[in-house]
Length: 130
Image (cartoon, helix red, strand yellow):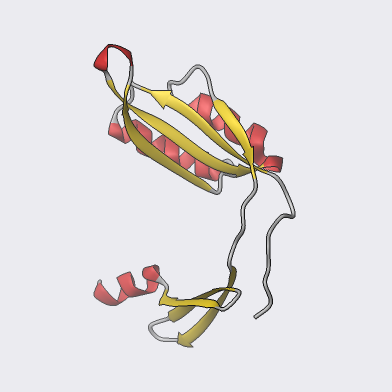
């Protein structure tokens, strides 16, 4: 398979620290930030000044969604400041193949150079166990 690099746009990783939000509020913030156009949102446990436990929020977004994502971070978290770095990324080529209709089972196939990864779609597996 042909090597495919995704350098067709700029990406940003945005960071913010919060030490005064509950788990429920963080979960809602994650959902709202994803809805604003983020590609990924994650939390890392940290300790801030005076030994207070907190979370570092990390968000990856395309440049075109930066303003919407930054607004969502300010709206849905308690942070009063964000940091960000410009980044690029390489992605594996992806495709999906349906292998069964009822219940639906899909294979996710990812490749890069001579590397190939195949796995069942997790959401389909969950439906089998319900």
